[in-house]
Amino acid sequence: MKKMRTLRDDWTEEDVNFLSKFGVKAKVGHMYLTIDEDERYYEIRKHFEERWKPLLWSHDGWGYEYSSEEFEKSEYFLLWHWRPCGYPQPLDNYKEASFDEPRICKKCGCGRVQTNPIRINKLSKHGFWTFFSWLIDEFFVSEKVYEEVFAPHGIEKRSVIKGGKVVDGVYQLVIPVIDEDLDLNDREHWKCQVCGETKYTMNHHHYPFFPQPENPLPGIFKTKEYFGAGHDGHQAQHQIILSRDVADKLIKSKDIKKEWLIPCRRKKD
Image (tube, rainbow, N blue to C red; front, side, top):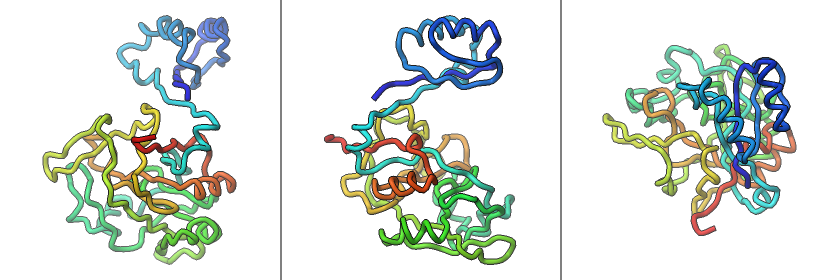
């Protein structure tokens, strides 16, 4: 496992020439650059630091790159990126249309319980996808992907509505929520002053591994805990955990990428 840095900026020709001295290939214009956190990184950061203040965080991010051995050793993975498509409908009151809205905390967004089919405005060309925002812990699948990947694990499905009609061959996965607390004591979190629920940071790439439950569910499941920004009432999401079997099949079908997975580890591992 290596710690990596991601540098972002609108690079000038002078910047490109400077970066080339460190073996970093860049082009003029807006571009993300990923490099090891080594001596090169600290020299580059020192050069640009004054220019990037006070928004240093928006120019210099970090994460981890995992070895093949670390992936092979993992039984479960956190899905931290996905293929987005469309938004829940109606955009101004999707909570009322598909959920028990009075149970949703107006301050932090926790407590969402689905009561009706979710309405969508677009269909993805992929077999496994979610929205661009708001309900990013609800996933949709083609019939083929459902039958080949999720049905063998006993995962149920729901109908999906588009334009007032049930969509043929596309379903929402009924992803179970595991009833087990995760060890998240080292993660940034916020406690809601209204409902008392805790939300944890979604900056998972800032941590080496994601904690694995002692008794994980088969196939795919949601964390018991909520995640999202502490101040944003819309973003209260469970996180999605995939078993190796499901992850391998979705990678093979090109519905996810290996780079979108963070290996899970039990505390004792």
